[in-house]
Amino acid sequence: MELREAIGRRRSIRFLLPHRPVEPEKNQRMLEAARIESHWGNVQSLRAVVVFRDSASPETLDALQAPIAGFQIRLAPVVIVWYIDGAAVDGQADRLRELLAAGALGFGEGKQDALEKQLIPIFQSIRDKLKEPGLGEVDCGQGIAQATLMAFEQGLGTCCLGSPNLDKIRISLKLPDTGRVLLLQTVGYPAETWEAGGQRPRRPFEELFHMNAYGEAFPRDPAVVAELERDKMFTTPAPLPWREAELAYLQKALGIKGHGLL
Ligand SMILES: Cc1cc2nc3c(=O)[nH]c(=O)nc-3n(C[C@H](O)[C@H](O)[C@H](O)COP(=O)(O)O)c2cc1C
Image (cartoon, rainbow, N blue to C red; front, side, top):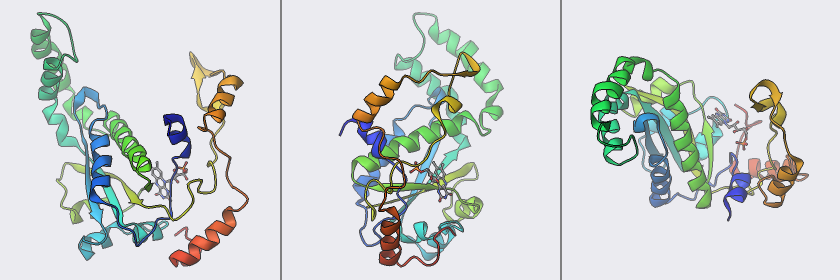
């Protein structure tokens, strides 16, 4: 499948087959994809614990339970707990040295000296600031996005979920004090069709993106839109006519009580 079509098909899959385990190697491929994503200063602060419902302790599974749409965590064969480790920033100087040695940074004779005497001291002077939420989270998000595409490419569905219990999860998984849980990602084989009801609504392009300065909408060329429709990056907007029937079927098949929102 072409990348454009893959981007168009990938969406949050809330309904997973509870009885079909996910092969560890498929999870490994997701982690491998996350690992090679870019990160400022090549710091690599993204970490994860992959929790398998079939083998994790009851305490761990209990800590993951979500107060919102809780059925998703309950049914998922795998939940990836993605977290950021601020301690990775402490290795910044060595990561920069590695980049220099790899030919990814700087030119010529003087670069070694400039790195040690100028660039590294700049980073060290703002080290605590760099541990605060910001760029690191962006990079982690990119890694998670890459893992998500890899999951999709292997026929899996995923859904990212926040949680108000992030500290409880951190303690239950024995994460280091420097770790901060970012989100939980359910992983499994989809119980719903790939459309999952259709393309979810998005704010208008012109409202989101600007040219040169805020207020001047980035011009949206209809020819490009038509091309992306042709390439299947844009799919039919939700809800597809049979979505309600599909939801009723899924609710019954998976034994989900109530409206499923909480
Ligand atoms: C970082 C992140 C956190 C999310 N947290 C939740 C959540 O806590 N509960 C939930 O039901 N959905 C959550 N979602 C799923 C969004 O609701 C979903 O992305 C949105 O409905 C759009 O659907 P789509 O991803 O299929 O385009 C989250 C998605 C992301 C990317």
